[in-house]
Image (cartoon, rainbow, N blue to C red; front, side, top):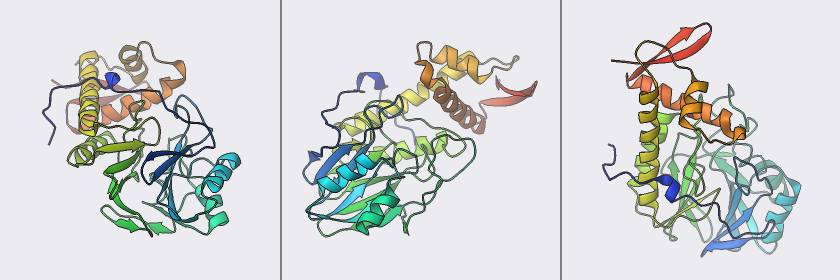
Amino acid sequence: MIDKTKDISIQNLLSKDLDFDYAVSKEVLPGIRRIVAPNPSPYTLHGTGTYIVGKKNVAIIDPGPNITSHIDAILAATEKEKITHIIVTHTHADHSPASMPLSKETGAIIMGYGPHGSAVGEEGADLNFIPDHFLKDKEVIKGENWSLECIHTPGHTSNHICYSVLGADAILTGDHIMGWSTTLVSPPDGNMKDYFISLEKMLAREEKYYIPSHGNLIDKPKRFVRALISHRRMREKQISKFLNHKTPTHIPDLVKKMYPQLDSRLIKAAGWSVLAHLLHMEEMKLIKSIENDANKGWLLLK
């Protein structure tokens, strides 16, 4: 079911501000600390947020890229504690690769939904990740002084999981919901229909805070999710506007019209996101694809 709340501009809610220092852990909420990895980019903002949940015997959520200085920072921040669990939200190269070296250093069990869903056509996938324990939707992971509920949220990737930190009234949202940008949905593993469904799934929950892997804490999560849904609806309305019934339109042309001032480094990502919308709209029988000179174009259906 689609939320009927009045559209809210997501651009008014996004922020690139973040109070942090590399290699230094900072408490976000009681029992939840963040260390930002030194991998800034147009896709990661300042870098990937690695989270430490609990005290004494702790869980590491999204250990991040395999960067020695970042792994050392995690170990330094937990020097007087024991890492018992290493848990990932999904298998992208800025989230999961540090799992194995950190596990070898600490003996911690590695957990995730599973390996990456597709090895075809996607940059930045961590194809080497295989968890020791395969998680399921609604499964509860229990540590000595912390518990996490798994929320399977496919869309950004097929194996994406958010984690509700029980007792903290907060969800670690990974890349499913970010504080600084909308989420990239890149086929074939990313799926726009799944992303819409997963946003609705989050909208039905009552936690007060979202803690994303990139960007700051979100303290009005329902408003934020409604804005993300509105934004995706807006993109599909744009596509319908720029397509016609007779001449096939190609993705590069749509990207130019839909993202007129886009950073050139993000053009390829925008193309993947547009493709995800097109495939979703084709599934809903709103448009159709046409092969034209070996290039796939798209037509609006009457």
